[in-house]
Every structure is written in C-alpha cells, then in structure tokens.
Image 1 (spheres, protein in one colour):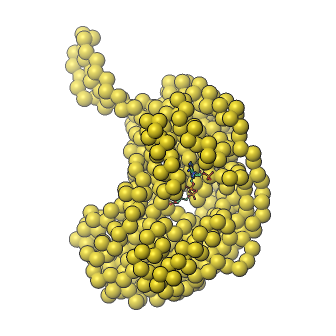
Image 2 (spheres, protein in one colour):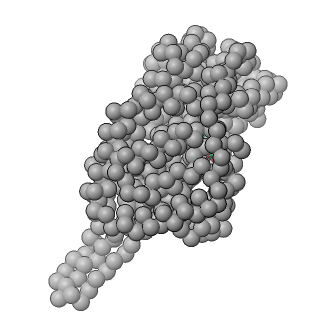
Image 3 (cartoon, helix red, strand yellow):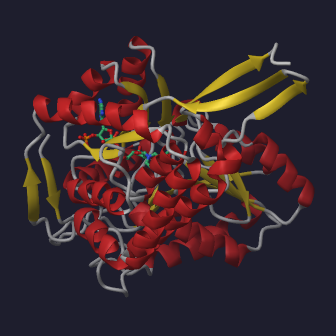
Length: 458
Ligand code: NAP
C-alpha cells in the first residue's frame, strides 16, 4: 500500500513517501535499543519534563497540528485542534503522575530486609496505529510508555504520514533523546518481521479486527506482550424514564463524532417501545439537518470519510442491510460530489444478521432497534461480538446500576456519551481486544512487574 496523504475533502494527492528500506529500519531499531538503555535510567522527573514540554508544544500549536489532521483525514477543524489539546492533557497527566505510578510497592520491611514490587520498563514498544484520531491514538500509547522508561517506535496508518512525522518531531522538540520516539514509514507487510526482532519488547495495535488478529498472532509466535484496541459496535440504550431531548442530542453527537469514524461512536440505538417513535422521529430529523461539507469550514458538522474505500465500504454495508430488510429513515447514499462524503443515515427494522447490526460501520450510519424493556435492551445491546463501550439513558437509579453491571463492555456511561479520559482505563472485551490504555492500568501494560526480596542486610 502506498504511503501517501490524500485530502479526503477533495481527493487531491498531497504528498507521497517511499517505504523506508530495511537498512533504515535496522538503523532505527539499533537507535531505539541504544536509547532505551539511557532512557530507562533517566530520572522519572526528567522523563516527565519531556512530556510537560510536549504538552506545551501541543497546546501552543494545536491549530497547526489540527490543520494537518484535517488535511490528511478530514477531521473537522475545531475537533482536530481539540484533539491536539486532549493530547496535551494526557502528556500532563503522565508527567504529573509518573512518580506516584512507578513507586515501588513495599510488601514487608524489617531490620535488614525489604520485600517490594517494582515496575520496570520492558524496552522498545512497537505501536501500530490507525488514522481516525491520528494524534490522540499515538499519544495514548506514547505518554505512559515514555513516562515509564520505555521507548516507542510508531508504525502509523499509511494515509497519515505527515501526522506521523509531526509526532516524531514533537518529541524531538520536547527534548526526548535521540531514538526515544521514532516514526517508521513502513507498510503493514513489514510489521510481522519487526515483531520478531529481539529489540522489540512488545507491540500495541489500535485498529481493525483483521490487523489485531495478524499482529496478535505474530506476537504470540514470538512470545511478545501485546495490547489490542480493536473495533466496536457500541450500543446506545434509551429507556422510558430517559430525558428524551438530552438522549436525542447526545445520540446524534455520539453517532457522528469524527464523521462516525470512532471505535466508541454509538452505532446501535436500542430504544424501549414506550419512547421509540418519539426518539426515532426526533433523532432522524436531527441527523437529516446536519451540515455536511468542507471540514475546514467552521459551519460544517460532518466532514468527509477518510478514504474512498472507507466511503465505499460504508455504502456496501448500508446496501446489504437494506437488502436484508432494513428501512432507510434518512440518508443511505454516498454524496455525488468531489471528496469522500456519505450522507448521515438512519436505518430502522435492521435484521440481527444485517451488517449494520452485526459488524462495525465506520461512518455516519445509525441502526435503530425497538425493545420491550430494560431486560431485552441489555440482551440486544450485548448481542454483538464487540465490547468496547456502551451508553444508556435512564433516570431510574436501580436500572442504572443494573445496566452498568450487565452491559458487556470496557466502559459504561449512564446519561452521557462514551469518551476516553487519561484518568480512566480504556479498552474492550470480546473481539474489541484486550489490555488497557490510559490511567495507571495503561502504564502497567508494558512493564516488568518485578518481585524484589532483599534479606540479610542487618
Ligand atoms: P486498520 O486498517 O486495521 O489499520 C490500523 C493499523 O494497522 C494501520 O497502521 C495499518 O497499516 C495496520 N495494519 C492493518 N492490517 C495489518 C496487518 N495485517 N498487519 C500489520 N499491520 C496491519 O484500521 P483503520 O482503518 O486504520 O482504523 C479503523 C479501525 O480501528 C476501526 O475498526 C476502529 O474501531 C479501530 N479503532 C479502535 C480503537 C480502540 O481504542 N479500540 C480506537 C480507534 C480505532 P496500513 O495503514 O499501512 O494498512
């Protein structure tokens, strides 16, 4: 696959890059190994200072980083600048908390003896990342990894090479020593060999199920630790006691964030029959009213999809769902204009085996499901191979507790939309992957949790 930037709003090819040669990759691996030896011994405060400087740069240049995201993958300008700012908050979070997170846990201490659990970094972590949040996904792995004394090698998605290079430059400018964070401009075909290299300690992937399977299999063959952050088909449950206006407004936002290209976008709307008709009418009207257009224009609410093949994939999934019996309430077509646009779409009566019910739809397409009560809502919400996030709207406290307990997902949000936050672990169950990012749980993924028992010193 070519490594090139194509503006999704226009289809114009902006830049293309040759894949790096095996010699270049070899040099970068050697540099990473050498860098780790110094970085793991660097005081935590000095590593934290690099992250603090990265945060300042991200905030100071959020508009220009944002413009790069908009150009390469079509994110709305305001959202792109907000993404750069969110990256700054994650860098600050780990800069402020690294010392406490890495403190040894003393189990017993006596005269001349000390038993404790230490956290020590594993080495070079290879990160295979997606284009949809081209800065955030990378920072989410890099900030805890670097704070903890690991070094990072980024293989970014092939359609966002300029973002990938900007991230490498960011850490260089923040003062990270040579080799602590490097970008590899390589295709997915080069990943397995890299995982097999002794200088790679672990691998983290955020992407599709297919990428997850291939990378986890390679990591398994080489007995390397892996973290998988894969796809989702998050349910959004609306029960009779819900504040309906708020549920509708949140549903529109939750489905159309990043033009629908978010792993935690709500994709299946599971609505109790007592409020179904009112919800469906208001939601459809709001989806229909969204302004689709140039992502750089501040009036735009839905930009293009990131590539022509993603747009075509969404169109195929909708067509197959309609063929299986789904009814189109609004939308249902790719827009006939320059750029990779797809209409905001609402589908009702979606059969359980149609793609819009069964698979992940990575675009502004909502599937509605009518259920009798909370029990059936939970069953329909959980009838998916994925388990990333889940949102539910209710004002009944007992129902809220039940939903939080029963929804099979890595995150459950009651009366709000699922979102990531550096303070909370992020990840999934079932085919959404394993392992966690963010919070102390994310930092611990790539650590040697070492038992150290010292006696006889008295
Ligand atoms: P993708 O096609 O799987 O690509 C993700 C990354 O994996 C890219 O760097 C890609 O490289 C690489 N890749 C793909 N197949 C590979 C293989 N067989 N071996 C090694 N590397 C491989 O996914 P995407 O279209 O970029 O991103 C969308 C997906 O990411 C969605 O499913 C979404 O739900 C998921 N996602 C999950 C999370 C989460 O936290 N759970 C967050 C965001 C997105 P190339 O670009 O060179 O092909």
